[in-house]
Length: 463
Image (cartoon, rainbow, N blue to C red; front, side, top):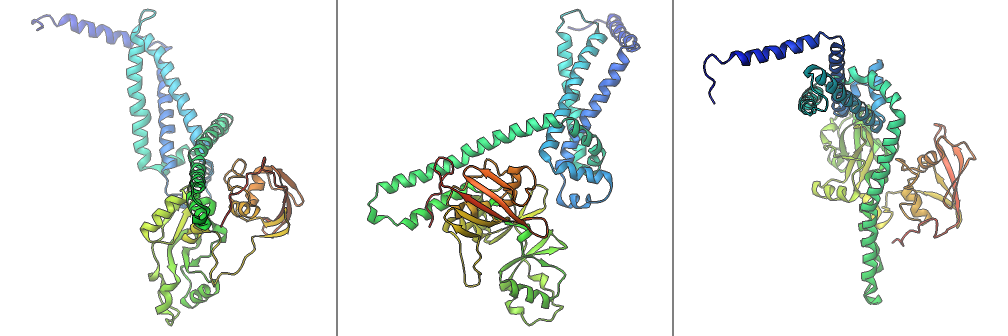
């Protein structure tokens, strides 16, 4: 409908009255603090939302640059050491800011619009307007900024998050523990049950075949292949403390001596420390250069390193290594640092058992005193211990936490560093710490037990 000329004055008058009402209400001392408080909450929500992107988007190079002596760098590294607690703190704080914004803005809108009691207009305006402001100023803009200036924003928010993490620690602990429990339950039901079902199916199929037609080694080999799905790279890798590496600045003469004395075929090449792996050197590539001078640039023989996360499933890694035609991978942790390395041989040994060639020295994983009494090195891998004791590979999953060594397991169960002669009981296993080495690492542990099918899951027969 067209508005006739000369009829605009009522419309202008209506808008004028509305804006005068807002100005008059704005002068109310009860309104101004609400507006200031909402602006503060929006700013806080923006900083917290941006900090999530800032902290969790840092590269390993940026983290290396932060390893300085200033307080903010130390706080950033400290917060990232417990990423689950940091994320829980961010989520809790951001939700509190958002709840505060929604609640305060509702009272502000009701006061400015002077609406009758029970009016739904305040809810509608609050929902549309506040949602727009929160999404734009509390999520999109800060996260775009944080993606481009992550280190700068992390330094700004490090101190507030440091204190907020302390305040929110009780609630964060409940959230982290509950999510870890749910994740573990889901992991167990998704992976381990499937593996056991497949192995039971193999046994059922074998039961239908004539005994003379069965090759037991082939059956166990098939079971071993199926069991790879239940392992992560972290469980079978070589720990970074046991990795034999080559410094990139050594001369060619020292390089040859190092390789011939170690007897390995592949070496990670590092720059100053194991976290800076520059490449992989194959010993066979040196054969045609054996008589070069000491200043020979052997770095040109390096191959590009292949990186994998420590949480990757072993069966997936095996497929990737086959496609890339590589035999060694560098394992990195959640911060981008080197956790260890894994080789094709490590994976195959989970299927066929220990592989020894003519250059391997026989290394005793344990000392067997009697049928139920052993002494293990503190650094022994938990999977190797399960094999030696002939118990199920998942026997320690309930208590091992993130540890993969015997020493780490004992600290998880005990809650601290156990003293010499400390005895720790788990299921039917009795652990006794015998000694520490010069670096204050658990050196030897004695394990005694009585086999009981009701308590310790028995291992399936191995090849």
